[in-house]
Length: 325
Image 1 (spheres, rainbow, N blue to C red):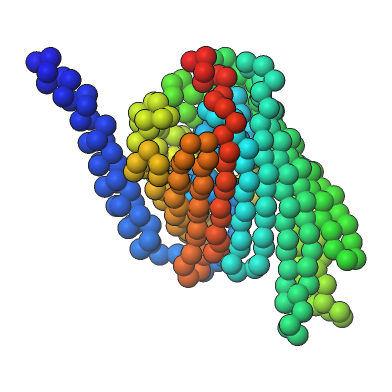
Image 2 (cartoon, helix red, strand yellow):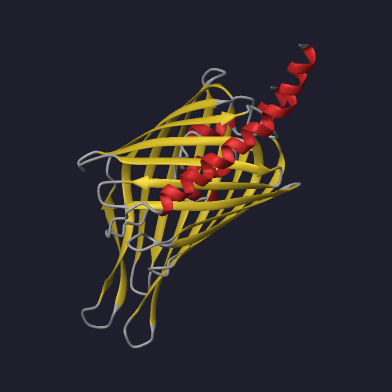
């Protein structure tokens, strides 16, 4: 009997890995064959891993990139890492770069800092490209209220600049994260305080790009993540689910994703975003080597926003909270 138990302990991770791979293949096939809406709505954000997991990322705390989706996640940070993120939108020519780094102030308090630079442009029809730049500063802070519950806030400041104009905007996001055990976590995030920024093209007279302020819609995110096993180094599968309600708009945005660690050095990811006006599959991979991690994500297909995204993470050290655990 004892030998049977030991044999089961040794083989169960492999069985779990095989089952997770089978679930990934099933999910991947269903997402790829799903019908898509023709309304192209930009749904990308920051972080290739987040993008490939359909942005169902409010419950994640693997690295500092999670602060853009839920600032409360910083308090549970698994790794302290320096990250560089690059996104290229195939349809509108947008290119965005992001630099992020966390700072642990104490056992219960963590801050995150992020800098973004976005280049937008349009062809004026005569072969010339009209360009504008947008820059952003993100400051996040999180605090452990109890050993299983954290609260966080993020302040974002944006500056848009063209040849003819300059514009400043600011916004705030609040979040809670509850993680009773490493295997599961829950999140609630509220955004919509402040002003955002969008760009448009003025083709009356000499073509030019114009930035304008926009009111951010009040939005509530509810998320759930499940992981097996609990150890990050031995993790086989992560399943992430999230619902997003934009107040004043009909319907709910549903997001679901799966990540399978095929080996110790590589992970496969697939996600799906379903909304009243857009449906978008997401795919990605991650590679791990010592202190370096490279993540790649893409979305493609007819009627969806197409983009490529790449993130490089450099491990600075294990989180003090994890070390204490």
